[in-house]
Image (cartoon, rainbow, N blue to C red; front, side):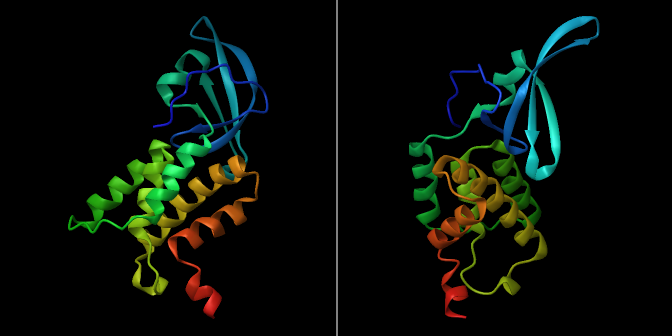
Length: 173
């Protein structure tokens, strides 16, 4: 997982929360919870229309981190270019593993899911749940790539699918 040695997030900083992906710090708030004053990060996940508050002292243990570095994203790209690992486990177990990797927030683990679920042929060969998990992983990684590379999410998703070789059939059509 990406290292995070600085938890002093400021308003406007983009961060990654493992279970929800990329969000933006709206600021810090102090609330009284169970009679104690608690400082909280308010994080807005615009894409999901969600707002999350995390105690500042729990930021590290919750997995909240800064956006990935270029180096870590390059590792994720290398993973995308690698060979898919064929697994013989039951789909329910593989699906659970994929969801765990996506919710880890680790770009390399998310890239593994994309690589393993890629299908260079028709979508008709994928089950509905495979397409859903693939799309979830693609969106999660594309959001982070878009912010790091300063491009749109759509451009980032296209770039990732090009790396996977997914757009060759679309371009031929």
